[in-house]
Image (tube, rainbow, N blue to C red; front, side, top):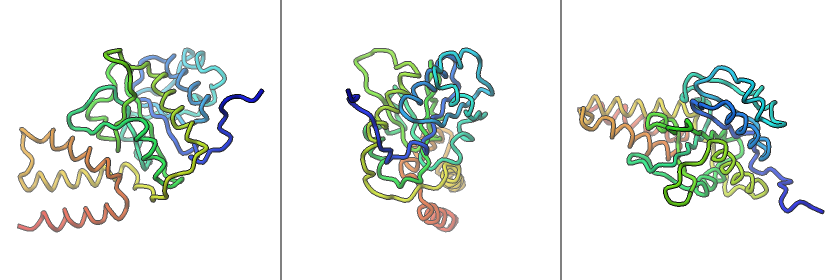
Amino acid sequence: MKLPFVAEQDLLDRSRFYVVLVNPENQENIGLVARAMKNTGFSRLRVVGKNELTAEALRTAVHSTEILRNANFYDSLAEAVSDLNLVFGSTVRLRKAFKVITIDEAVSRIKSYSPETKIGLVFGNERTGLSDAELRQVNFVFHLPQVGRQPSYNLAAAVLITLYTLFRESATNLISQLPPPIPRKEQTDCIELILKKLEKRGFMHETNRQHVTDLLYDLFGRLALSERDRRFLTAVFNKGLDKK
């Protein structure tokens, strides 16, 4: 008997997706994440805040230990996503400074970019999630719906739901062929340039600095800057704001 659902095609190219775990507390959860990745056809794992995996992670990564053995480790989220073009961060809470989209909206965004776009899927600590500072390192913040005030999903469950949502789309065509955004580090450098110019012009002060910083990171993050965008913004803020 044929299984009810098997993705025989991979038009999304799952090899360009990177699952990024930020400061995970529980090694067993890391192993379960690897298992979820193997079940859905994803293989690239990055871990922030740890430099090795223990036997507990290997024990729960049933038939998925190769994902753990090939995982990369980083000291910071900024470093972990620096070479990626489009980064999505998961949250269970609404954020004042960041627009939160649904997982389905996130998938639609992903499908609008060309296949060479390198994509990061970022998940925070089991207890605290992603901080506002960490959310500045992503382009889009997405959430997974749940009933009422039920506590947030377990880390591995959140990863599995996200990856399965993408897995279902693996046999469907991309919507369009937008070019990849510039690497995340270059996007961040552009945002930091804008912030410095605003600071120099006196727009930033102690009472609004944090709020303005978060808003600009959210705004320009969702724009997912292309090379053309970067050149235009750099010219505007270098020349326009430097004039007295």
